[in-house]
Every structure is written in C-alpha cells, then in structure tokens.
Image 1: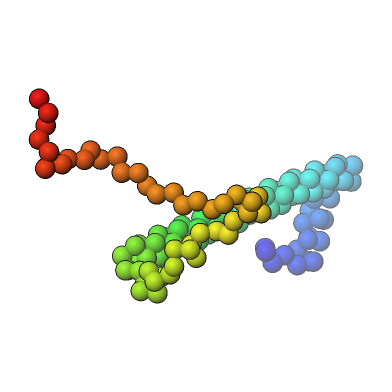
Image 2: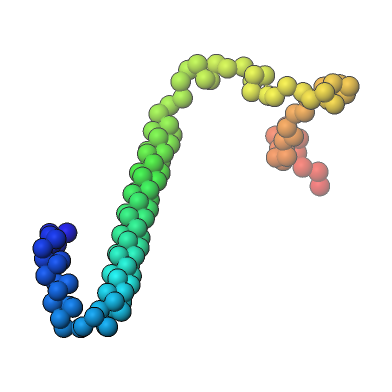
Length: 127
C-alpha cells in the first residue's frame, strides 16, 4: 500500500528507539499496533457496509426491472385478443372434478335467477 521496505522500517525503528528510549518503546509499539488494528477493522466494516449497500441496490434494481417486465407482459396479454383455441374449450373442462363426498349426492345444475321486473305490453294495468 505505502510501498515501505525493510530498510525503511528498520530506520523508523532506530529513530523511535533513540527518541522514546528502551523503556517506553514497547508500550508505544503496542499502542500503535492497537490503533492500526482498529483502523483496519473500521475500514473493513465500512467496506463491507458499502458492498452490502451496492448489493442491495443491485437487488432492488433487478426486482424493479422484473416488476416492469411483469406489468409489460400483463399489458400485452390484456391488449392481445384471446386465441380461438382458448374460446373453443368446453365449459366442463373448466370445472374441477367432484370430491368423494359429493359422489353420494345427485348432481344438480343451478340456473341464474333474473330479478329484473317483467313488463307485459298485452295487459293493461288494473285500476
């Protein structure tokens, strides 16, 4: 990252030994190591969070695109007329088969009831 070689590290260590002395140098190295470790962990956490956000944005974008494609398909299906083969299907094929409990009862067909008032032009209203 910084392209520091062994000779540069040795030079920094000798200068630190002369400036800090042999008594305080181990504590200073330990403190520097702790700070460097914290910085690395912080950068790693930030990097992981950014990658998660980028991944979440990517997933949101894909879901949005899929929704748009689904809406487009629905629009095409609603605009396109139904094929002649689908209208020729028999009405019995659309009904589900009866359950085993329904086999004992006779099948009855119900007809819709017309509730509109009936007007008869041949009869006059009674007074």
